[in-house]
Length: 113
Image 1 (tube, rainbow, N blue to C red):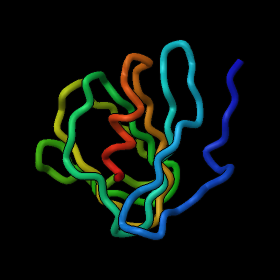
Image 2: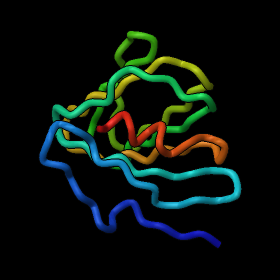
Image 3: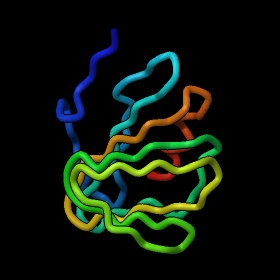
């Protein structure tokens, strides 16, 4: 059994960068929490494996291949590997990102430094 909380120990960064943390690892996935304040963003990047993004709280503009999609609380989006995407926070948000166990956590955290 694995257990985690998207709401425990939330920390918004005061600079222009989102806060990224691993909240759970399983045999198949790495579950990450991205906490963003309005105006913060993650530049365009790709993932080497499929990903799932869930908006737990707030609103983001999620760019896919240069086309912006508004994602609201409760929305979930899945992307195949190697699809260019970016995120811009519209209102303070909590995002759950599901990565393949084969993906590297450092790949995501370096996008916020």
